[in-house]
Amino acid sequence: MGRCIVPEAEDILDVEFPVLDKGFVRLVDYMGSDQRIVQAARVSYGAGTKTRRQDAGLIDYLLRNDHTSPFEQVVFTFHAKMPIFVARQWVRHRTARLNEISGRYSVMPDEFYVPEAADVAEQSRDNKQGRKTEPMEAQAADSVRRAIEAVHEQAYAGYQSLLDEGTARELARIVLPLSLYTEWYWQIDLHNLFRFLRLRLDPHAQREIRAYAAMMRDLAARVCPLAFESFERHLAGGVRFSDEEMAALRNMLNGEDSGLEGKAAERFETKLAEGRQI
Ligand SMILES: Cc1cc2nc3c(=O)[nH]c(=O)nc-3n(C[C@H](O)[C@H](O)[C@H](O)COP(=O)(O)OP(=O)(O)OC[C@H]3O[C@@H](n4cnc5c(N)ncnc54)[C@H](O)[C@@H]3O)c2cc1C
Image (cartoon, rainbow, N blue to C red; front, side):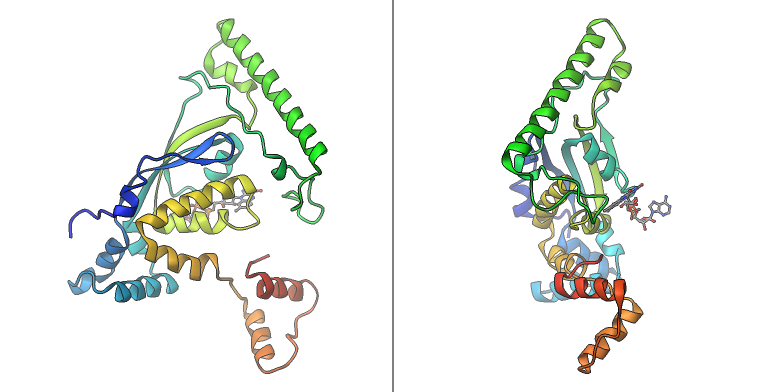
C-alpha cells in the first residue's frame, strides 16, 4: 500500500499536450490514485482496496454524498502555458498552489494567442459575457485575426525597443497585451480540481479556458478513472434543482403541468433539455 503508480498516467508524465495555438498542459507529477481514495475512505475500518467494482461503488457513494476529503488525498502538479487572460480567470481558483514565470526576471518571448478563424465570433446579444456560438464568416474572421496580429507586432516592437534602451524588464513588460503567453506550475488536489472543472468545463466559461480544463480533465482521468466516471455522472453531468423545481418535477411525474411560469419555467426547461444550469 505504498506509493500509487498508475501505468496509464506514467505513460503521459512530462508529455506536452498542445492547447490553443501555442499553449500546452503537461502532467508533471501525481500523488495517489483511485486506490488512495479508497484506502483513505476505508482507513477507519483498517481494510484496503477490494474488487474494482466495490471500489467504484465506494468512490461513487463518496462523491454522490459530498464525502469530499478522501478526494483531497490525490494531488496533481501540472505545467501549463496559457495566454494571460486565461491565467487571470484560472488564478481565481484559490485552492491551488502555483509558481509563474516572472516578467521581472525574464524577457518575455514573442508569443501571443491568435484565435483560429472558427473561434472568432461577434459579441453575443443575450449573454453579455460571451460571444455568439456561430463564428464570423471567413473573410471577417480573417480580418479580425490580422488586426490582432498587427497589435501584437506593434506591442512587441515597443517592448523590445524599451528593453534596448535599457528600461527595466519589470517596466518594459507593461506594454504587452493580455494575449501574451505565460506559464506556471499549478498544484491542486482532486476535490478542488473537480470544483475547477465543474466551473470551467461549463458552456458559460470562456472557450479558451475550457480547452485547458478539458485537457487537464483528460490527463487527470488517467490517474483516477473511477473518480472521473463519478465526476462525469454527478458533478459535470448533473444539475441542481431548487425546491420549487422539485415540486415542478413531481407535478410532471403526476402528469400535470410543471406549474412554473416566466423565467423560472425557462430555466427549468433548459435544465431538463440541456442538463445545465442557467
Ligand atoms: C463563468 C464564470 C464567470 C465569472 N465571471 C466573473 C466576473 O465577472 N468577475 C469576477 O470577479 N469573477 C468572475 N468569476 C470568478 C468566480 O467568481 C470565482 O471567483 C471563481 O470561479 C473561483 O471559484 P471559487 O471561489 O469557488 O474557487 P476557489 O477559490 O477554488 O474556492 C473553492 C471553495 O473554497 C472556498 N475558499 C477559497 N478560499 C477561501 C478562503 N481564503 N477562505 C474561505 N473559503 C475559501 C470558496 O468559498 C469556495 O467554496 C467567474 C467565474 C466563472 C466560472
